[in-house]
Image (cartoon, rainbow, N blue to C red; front, side, top):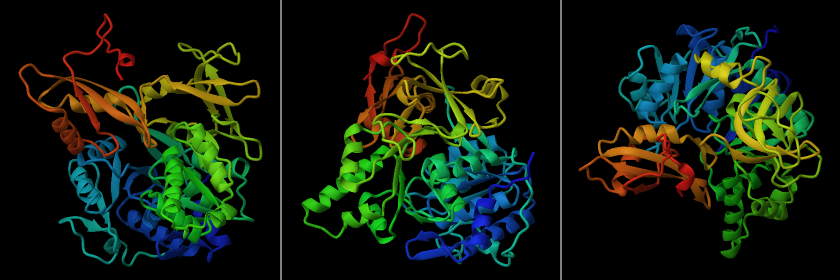
Length: 528
C-alpha cells in the first residue's frame, strides 16, 4: 500500500502557507509553521523515550492548542493517537490505557472544576504497561502541580523543532476512538491513516471546502470526539483553514467569537444550536445589541449538525436568524465518523441525514441477516455502511469486529432508518439502547454495571428520557437490596463520584420491582 502519514495534513499546509494563522485560542495566535515546529518537538520527545511506529499514545486534553500539537506530534512519531474523553475518572482512564496498550499518556492539567491531571495520573498509576506520563500545564514553564508527574513543557525543553516523520502505511492505525456497545465495555475503533485522511478531504465535496478560500472554523465540538476531530480540526488543517478554539461550549462567548474572528464554518450538536438561539434572544431581551448578528450572518458560510436528530423548529429558527441552512449528517466513530450529509448546494430536507458522502455506500439491512430489506418509502432497516471511512476493526476484539463488519466490508451501525425514492436517509430509531445526552453517547449497560457495585443496589435499569436542552437525560430505576437503605439523592451523588459527568444518572427512582419478560429480560419500553 501507499506510504502516508495523517500528519501530512499539517505538514503540507505548513509548507504552503507557513505564516497563515492555524490556531486561535484567546489572545494566542499560532501560525502553521509554529504548530508544525511544536508538533515536531513532541515527536522528538516521544522518539527519545522509545515511542515509535505502531505504538499507542493516549491523549486527554480539552480544546486548546496542545491537543492539536500533541495529536500531530504523536502521528509524526509513527504512533497511533488514543484520544480520551476529558470527563473520565481515574478508574475509567486506567481501563482505556490498559485496553489500548498505550505506551505513553499525555494529559492536560485541567481546572479546579475539572481536575483532569489528578484523575489521569491516578489512572496511569494503575497501569504497569504505560511507561510515560506527561502533564500538559496551562503554563508550559510552570512546575508540576502533581508530585511525581513530569510536565510536557519541561520534557520538551531542548527538543529540536524539526523531525523526519516516520513513514507509515496508509492502512496502519492512526487513531483509536473509543466507543461502547451493548456489552457495556468501551471498545477501541481502529481508524487507518487513509480513513481519517479521506474523511477530511471529502469536505471539498461535502462542504465546499477549498484551499483557495480557506475557512475559519469555530471549534466548540470536543476534539477528543470524532466529529470535532475530523470535521473541524483535520478538515481545517487539510485546507489551510484557521481553527478558533473554545474549551467549553458556552453560547454567548461562542457568538462573540464568531463575530470577532469572522467565523465562516460552524459545526455543532443540536443542543449547541438551541443554545446559540437562546443566547441571542436573551441578549436582545436585555437590550444588549453588542452581538451583531447581521455581521455573523454575513460571514457564516456553512453550518453543520450531527450527533443526534436536530429538532425541526431549531432548524428553521437558525436559518431565519443566521441566514444559513444547517446541513445535517450522520456517522459513527467506526466510520471516521462521517457517512452521510445533506448534499452541498442542494435544498435541505429537514429531518433527513442526507445521502452517502462520495466514496461511501449505505444500505438498509434486515434485522437478522446481511440481506437488504425490500425497499418501499415506509420500509425500515438497519443502516449498513461501506467505503473508505469504515474502520479496520475493534482493537483486540476480533469477534466483535467479525460481528460488526461483513466479509465484503459492510459495517452494521445498529441504527434504524428509512430511505426515500431519491436516496435520502431518515433515522427512525436506534436498535441499540444507546442514549445521546448533549451529543455524548451513553450506554445503559455500562451505567447499570457501575450502579450494581453500590452496596445497597440489587438491580438497576437505565433509560433515556426526553430533556429540553440535552436531548435526553439519564434515568435509573433501582431496586434496593433487602434491608438496605439509600435515597435517590444519595445514589445520584455516589454515581457522580464514580462516573464521568456526562454518564451518571441525574434521575433515580427507587422501585420495588421492574417489568420483565418471562425469561427475565427487563422491559425497558414500559419504563418512562
